[in-house]
Image (cartoon, rainbow, N blue to C red; front, top):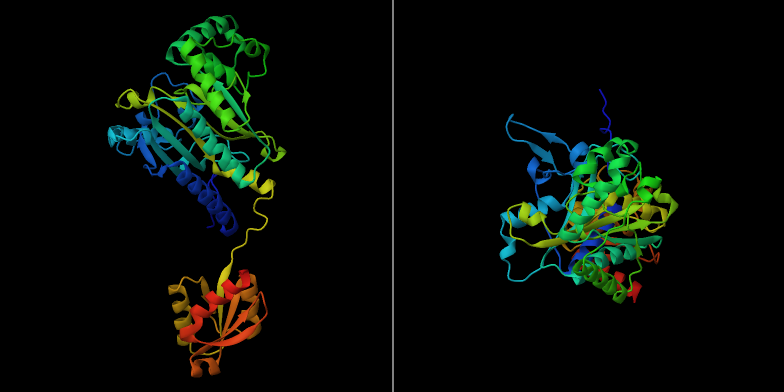
Length: 423
């Protein structure tokens, strides 16, 4: 019997894994630049970590993989990164850190049971950050900057920043009541999901995928911010201007999770390769999540980037054109006895060279073809004469030069050849 991957999952083979690691490595570089510490949380948590009272998000109501292994505890495969990070933040009392904010990051697998499509799978990887501490518009701008400049560093140029505010708790509650009053007469004209959202979280109606183009939604009242929320949002925009980050105000942007307050944002692709899934990453500020997890009243802000969509866009813009796996040395062994070739290979690896050797005793021609396919910089030839003299014949693929080198001098000579070539 043969098997295939489960619908909504996929294999990452060598070339794609190289692309994945390149993007993840660059992200880790930006985490260092901005002072973030990477961490890991369990792949499954108690369901209550993700499902909050009155949560109307699609992720919580439709898409979570929830199971009960003992018939008692309800567990859920991690559908997003923020909730688990905040659970860990509270459980490990990170709020006692005298140096705030606490800057945390993750590169983790997530799971959602949604319709698979281009750039959206049921098992997927998110790169994310969470900055937790006192609320400050400068932090909001810096979080957006981290993600934006990371995307630009990859080489993605067809992007724009969308920005909005949901106001503080006071502004949001007033706006919620205003939207409920506005949408109630049109309830029967809303989609099924929005009818359920109306009383619990009417803000979600504004970015409904079904109704967002309707005149009912287009004519919905806009949020009236109180003075403190207006001032806060103005400062966020000011700091983005200082950082030279262009943005557009999108007053229908509310994001898909119900815990956001104040600043919300998305960075979207304008490249046609993105298809209907144009959001590269998005996030926002949350004032209440830490307290809901049993911690103190403390605020946070973060974002998540979908790796799969990022890889598609990077491929479309030619970011990976020069991406090839390179090998420092390929050892061609022309002897029946493999001991000497194995000794040379092991010695080179101990000295930090990527190195492979022939295992099967194939012909010289066949081994040379393998060295070419593996893109080896040096081809090391070991025949009977080399074994007897304790040496190795070195062929420099780039310069075409060939010489014989004593085994004990080989590592130093290869280092010198590499250095001389690039001087």
